[in-house]
Structure formats: structure tokens, C-alpha cells
Image (cartoon, rainbow over the protein chains, first blue to last red):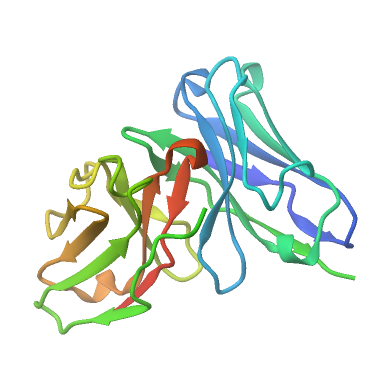
Length: 119
Length: 109
């Protein structure tokens, strides 16, 4: 069964850091582009970051997180990461990892991990 | 990059049909046949329902269908069932912006 499992969320003060992880199973992780998508409480979906397959050389960041967040992957460990620094209150959201599917779509999604930035 | 525009809400009775629109620009929806739709129940992760405008992943009922005309894509749910009550998000490939999501539509059955 194809599965994605996020971890690493929690409560952090403004200006703090967190590292999210996404463990993949049931498919050849190195063959797929991967993404982090977030959803603020009661709000819609927003692509946070994208990384290409295998080499991980191509990366994308939303303007709102550029320079503060860094996406990476370890294909040997079937894992995706999101290092989040200089966190702001507005970064509070559920963070989902999602695999690229055919034709620029996302499937499956993990269950999400909640990041709360508050003093 | 602005979000794609969806109506905030839509509704229908069981057995009826509902259509949700998703309006973008010539840089995203109008430029590529890479529109996808996601269903999200409260407290759950989004689920892919339609990709490449009108294709259904295996396991998605054929009551769900997608189409596109110009800069506007649409999702139609026919034969509405109680379990179709959820939030629906469209998404388009946006070139250098990769994935651009819609504002979301709450469907009430």
C-alpha cells in the first residue's frame, strides 16, 4: 500500500525552527517528485515547496516561505524533509506531504502534521 | 500567483447534480490541460478525484466528472450522495508556480 506519514509538527514560538519529516512506503520513492502543501486553520490549500525526483536539484518555494524554509530528500531512507526557520504566526497550519501523480496532480497525501506558531 | 476562483458553496439534494467552477488565467488553467480536483472531508487529508481535466483515478466513482473551457474548469458530481458532502479544491499546473490551488467550495447535500 502506498503510504506517506508526516511527523515533526508541534508548538513553537515565533522566530523558532522545526523540521518536518515524511516517511514514504509502498512505492519507489526516488522515482517521484514530492511536495509540501499546507492548510491554515479554516483556510484553503497552498503549495509550500516542491522537489524533483532522484537528484533533488530542482526545488520550488512559495514566496511566503522563500529564504526561511528548505526542502530536502533522502532517497536511501525513503524520506522527505522540510526545515522551517524563522517561523511566523502565519505559518500556523497543517502541513501535508504529497506525491506527484500523473499530469501534475497530487496523490496520495499524508495525514498531515500540525504546526502551531505562537508565543 | 493568485489562487484560482471557486464559489464558496454549492448544494443539491440527494440524486441531483452539482457543478463547481474553477476560474484561472491564461497562465494556468487556460494554458495547460493539467487541472485536478480534490475532495476533503472535515479533519481528513485531501483526496484526488480528477486529474488532467477529466481523468478519474481508479476507485473514484464515475459520478464525478471534469471538463474545461478556456480559463475555467468545472467539476460535476451527478447522483449526489450524502458522502459527497465535503470541501472541493481545484488545482492547476501554473508553470513556474507549479501547483496553484483554488479557493475551495463547500458542497452541501
